[in-house]
Image (cartoon, rainbow, N blue to C red; front, side):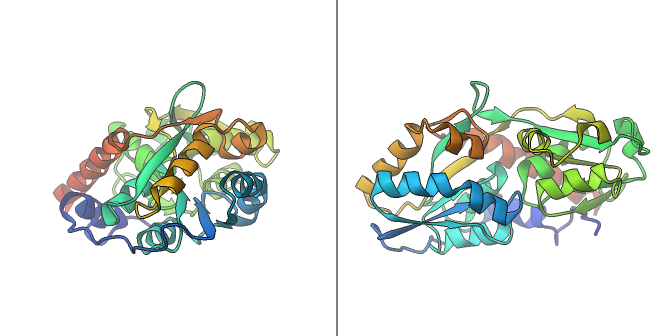
Length: 293
C-alpha cells in the first residue's frame, strides 16, 4: 500500500497532534499496583520479544518486589494508546512512538535511554537486495521501498527524511510499502520481494548475528544521521517511591543477557528534549506533503 504523506496519513495526523493537539490527560490508574505491566515495542516477532524478555521479567520482579507482566501489543499505535489510557505502567518505546505517546499523554515520563557504543544514539540503515535493481539511492526512483510501522523512527521517519535529502519523495519518486516490523523488512529485501528498505541498524546486526539474515544477500546503501535511542517511559501518576525504584532498576542494570535483549550496553537518564529533533523531522515531512497537496 502506498503511504501518501497527506492529511489522512498517520504522520500528518500525529504531527498536527504534536503541534496543535489539545492533550487529553492520561488515565489516572493505581499509583502503586501489585502487578506492573511492562510493554515492549513490537518491532520484531512478538513471541521472540517475550521469550527474550524473561530475564528482564525475573530481574524486575526481584528488584521491585512486584509481579511483572510483559506486554507486546499488536502494533505501535496500540502501544501508544495503551500508555495513554493506563493499560500499561511502563513502556519501552521507539523514539518517534514515544514522541507520539507524549503528545497524547503529557504526564508520561521518559526516565531511561539505552546507551550503545558509549552514546545514547543509533542509526537507521537503508539496504537493498544484493542482486536486485537498486545499487544506489538514484536507483530507488520508480521502485518500491520497504518501511516498517508508520510510527517507527528507524524503519520509517528517519529513512524517509534521509530519502528526501536524496531528492526522493514517497508517493512521487517511489512506492512506499509498510511491512510492520523491522525483521519483516529485512526478510523481504533479502528474498527480493522488495528491492530496498530500511530498518534499525542494531536490529539488522542482531538479525545477522542470530542467522536470520544472510549478509551476502543484501547490500548497505547508507546510514541515516544519529537518532536518539529508544526511551523507557513510565506513567506520571505512579507513586514517587515506585518511580525511584524503576529508575534505579534500569540505570543500575548490569546483567549482560538483559542488556543484550535491548541491544544496548547500558542505560542512562533520559531527557525529553533529546527527542525534539524527531518532532522537527516529522513537521518537515508534513510541510513537504502540504506543499504537494
